[in-house]
Amino acid sequence: MISNAIEYEKAEQELRDLEGRLGRLQESHPIGSKGFTKAGIHKMIARIHEELAVYEGSQEARQPEVS
View 1: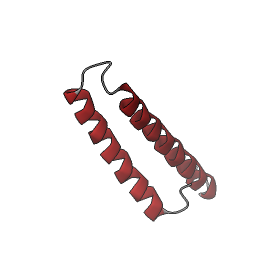
View 2: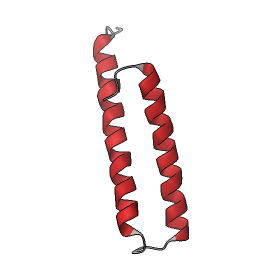
View 3: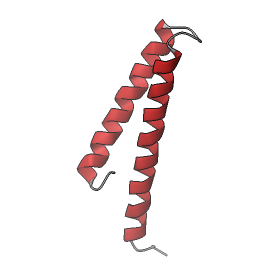
View 4: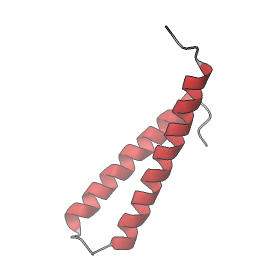
């Protein structure tokens, strides 16, 4: 779970790396090939997106609303 800005930045970098890796896999292996690998990467990307959203939500909850 992401608990500070440094971990948030690391998670964003990991997300960019995974998206790049997925893009390269999709280019080099057509649909149906390497399916388990692609599915695993999609799952990792989804997990990171979820963790980023939880952290962003907690940051918004900590900051007072500006009217």
